[in-house]
Length: 237
Ligand code: UDP
Image (cartoon, rainbow, N blue to C red):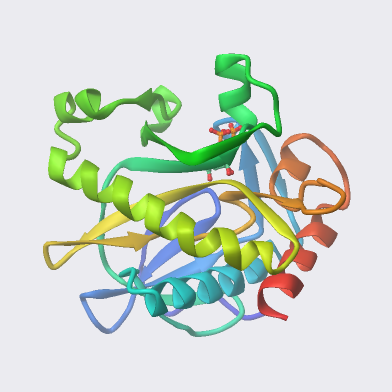
């Protein structure tokens, strides 16, 4: 196992640590194996999750860049380390949904597995103390979190990213049920940040409809490590 990065730690999140680099406009994301769910009430580790999430994110950020979507990705440095542009994160989680699952099924009493077309976009205000509440554009304006123009751009980018990722996963016999995006501001420009991985997406195997993502941890479905490795194989293999 490689040691900790050389820089100063700027931030430690649930699944990643962020370190300084020699350049003030770049940071290093270090992917951990720690897993949390239900606003960190459930904790555990998933062996080699950090390696899988780093490599899957690299593949997806590269794909999105090729399709003209700006991201914070610069380069993967090692199994667990990714060099990225240093952004100011917009404290909004943008969730894109193609299939009913998770909190949407619960909140609206909808049947899990029902297709949503066109995709549904939701905003959640990133605030651990409040438990990341679902909010609308007016709430975010009230909170001074994002201007209408930024909200419009995040919504447009959510749809564009979905249009790239849906067929990519379909080719790999995976249904992209839903996923969460975070954006950041870099030189006055909104770019995609954070990660896109089995921690932040729901994938169902196209044939068996089995979960290949963090739901296996959330719901104690077993074979968690195996599912993460299978995603790595299908996405990067
Ligand atoms: N998600 C995430 N981080 C969060 C909340 C949700 O990455 O803090 C992802 C989650 O993995 C799923 C999608 O966003 O792919 C929608 O999650 P949902 O609202 O259904 O919440 P959950 O059921 O995960 O509580």
